[in-house]
Length: 231
Image 1 (tube, rainbow, N blue to C red):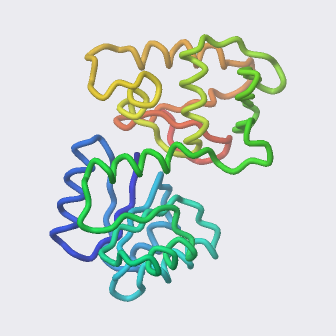
Image 2 (cartoon, rainbow, N blue to C red):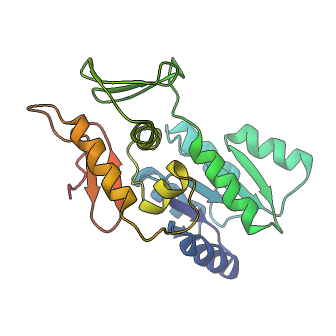
C-alpha cells in the first residue's frame, strides 16, 4: 500500500514509518495539517493515518477539508483522544476508522487492510468497472468492451484485487497477501506468471493493455489517459 502518515511527533512518526516499511508499504510523512492537506490532494494514496492534534490545522479540520474537496481516500485517526465524544466527533468529521494510542501495531495493520479492502462506491456494489473492463461479482463473469473473457479462479481474484485498487499501485506483497493469503515471500515467480496469463487474456486488438507495470513498485490498473508511466 501507499500510505500518507500525518503525525507531528517525531518519535511516533519514525516508529510508524519504520514498521510500515518493514511490512512492504510505501509511506509519505507530513508533520503539519497543512502539509497533510497538500499531499493528500496532490498524490494518490491507499489510506491516510492521521493524528488529531496537529500544528497549523488539526486533524478534524483536515479531514473535513479533504471530504469537502472530494478526496475520498480512507482516513484512520490514530490519536490519544479516546473518549466516546472524541471518537464520534472524528467519525462524523469524515474519518473511516479510529484507533486510540497506545495501540498494538498488528491492530493498526489489520485496520488498514480492512479499510483498503472496501470496494469503491458503485451504484451496483456487485459490479466493478475500470474503463472498458467490468467484473460481475455475483455471476463471476468478466467482460471487456462487452466481450466475455474466461478466467481461471485465481486470475479472476487477481483482476478483482487490481480493480478494487484501481488507480493505485499494487505491489507483489499485496498480491501475495490478497490473492494467495501468503504472508511471506514464496521465492517463486507465482505473481509474475499469473499476471502474464491474465494480461494475455485481457488483450484486445487495437486496445492498450489495461494493466501497467510500474518498474520497481508493482502494477496498476487504470482508465486510459491517466498519465502514469508504463513499464
